[in-house]
Amino acid sequence: MIFKFNLFRSALIIVSTLLVSCGGQSESTGVAGEAMQAQQTYEWKLVTTWPKNFPGLGEAPEKFADLVEEMSNGRMRIRVYGAGEIVPALEVFDAVSAGTSEMGHSAAYYWKGKAPEAQFFGAVPFGLNAEEMESWISFGGGQALWEEVYEPFNILPMLGGNTGVQMGGWFNKEINSLQDFQGLTMRIPGLGGEVIQRIGGVPVNLAAGDIYTSLQTGVIDATEFVGPLNDLALGFYDVADYYYFPGWHEAGSLQEFLFNKELFEALPRDLQVIMRTAASAVSAAMADEFRVQNSNALSTLINEHGVELREFPADLAAELYDVSQDIIDELGQSSEIGQRILASYRAFEAQIKDYQDISEEAYIRVRAEQR
Ligand code: CA
Image (tube, rainbow, N blue to C red; front, side):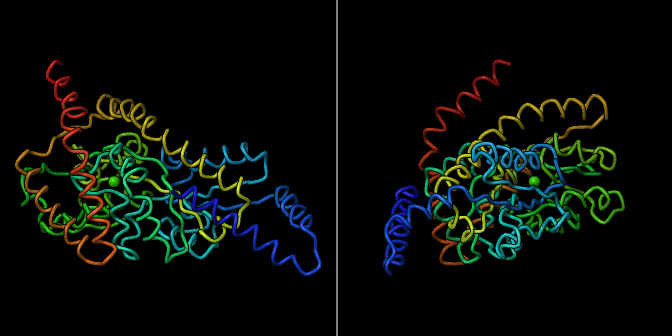
């Protein structure tokens, strides 16, 4: 659908180019113009929310830039900047919106202050897992809604990877009931943070580079971040006692490539296709790589750093589930587009449930019983 739309738009651009050149110029000028455009080189900036070359998350945009440069034979060069190098971690969206950076790599829930509905495209507590989330975006109507949310900001989003199910977080006390969250200051962004707030905790949003010191100095009592790979890299095992699972609040967190929409659409058609293809390839690989790297990092955390794992008790999980459903429904009802996103999300959940129950979920349950 998008492909057809773009083809139609490309045709319009060619027609209007020809119309503009009607003043005594021949059609060959247009062709020459296109040939010139085909040789033009571009240098773009890509800003990220991650420390430079941060495992997994920060490597994805670097791989993207390398792929694009190679696929375009050097016509598109993209320089990747880590958080704070030219733009603070949580100002990536603004920089891409304004076009001061042509591209970004981040996660949608960081922009809830600008567009609350963006949170549906990051992670939904007890919501779709990684594979389901990407199916909804790519084949269940999610992409068009995501584009609509970012349209007023002149930003075009694309899938930028997925962390898979995250960990539940790092705590300095055991968590046995909702009461244990009372007054607890926890770094947890997005809808998960709203759940924590609803049950009496104090959610804060901190970029990766600021979490360790905040936990060490007691500015926060607890934190979640991603999973073993990234959490090991940030050294949380030094400043917290218990590592909880599962990450009920982020079952399949999408990462995103952000493009300044106007600048992207002004690119020659083939470069646009190269960018889309590279984004898609890098995105698809991230969860696969995380699975391997998280397994290795978990073993390091336990065996070399003596980290103690804890599972959230089942009755607590049930209570968190109920609060999560309220928060999701309230977000969906808060705006007209929110209503349409919620309807699409819920319809997709319902559509796949019966099949998931007897395929993936049945298999995982049966396999676990044999081990
Ligand atoms: Ca997280």
